[in-house]
Image 1 (cartoon, one colour):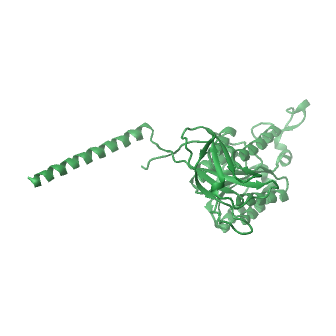
Image 2 (cartoon, helix red, strand yellow):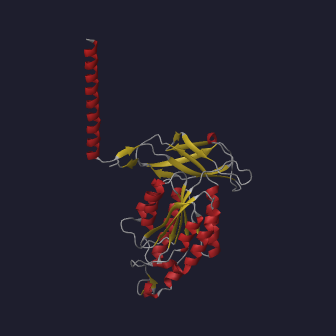
Image 3 (cartoon, rainbow, N blue to C red):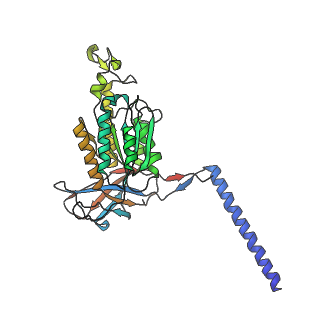
Length: 349
């Protein structure tokens, strides 16, 4: 009788197990057919933060308990904290960062290519040896010259291999780097974007969509705008009569748009990218200023605190961010808002 009872119990357990497995499989199949995505609600929001005193000097040595982070007025719990290393006493050793170096190589830059290459090479030497860099050039095509690597020889060869092309898919290149390249990188991420700001070749991407992509990401963008209008206007193929005031000679882009309008929009676009991501816009109208811009960016990257948290609210919306510190008489700079979007991932086939 005892042996018979054990058999009954074993059979009952087997039936329950099979039913449970079939139920789970059925739910998975229904979920895949309904949406074919798995919603992930553990998005980590990463904030680059720069703290300065009244004289503009960087304030080092702050601890996580000295910061308070608010999202739409609701205080958040800090899940990750990283402090910058002091130049004098090396308070901490920050983890390596990932930098996407994006270089505009459209036809409007052909007279500045050597300057672009030389300053980009110098920028590599200003980063820490462990920092990883990917090099992307773009004209009407997006060229990923290197994936992220700390190998300076590979990076320098990639920069020296650049040749100018035609057209500019600025919006498309930025969305590609944010959504497909840097989204896979861990830790602190930044884009150094060297361009005149004029887009003439993007198809599906736009001014608005690329700004939104920047707001949704945790990437800090440092645009460096160099002027190409003089070179542009010297090109006879870009002249159009009767477009300007009183029938005067005007210059147009490849799309037939007034060059002055395109360049003004480019300037506004680059400034907006920096403002939305807590980066810094810089204008470099000479080789010396271009070199100083790169040096300034490298310095700012070393001076940043990093704070990350898991937002309490899961509603997809734009959210205002406020970071405070208990230290008196300091200025805290970080991004002022971002667009929360639940991350999704495709199930494995």
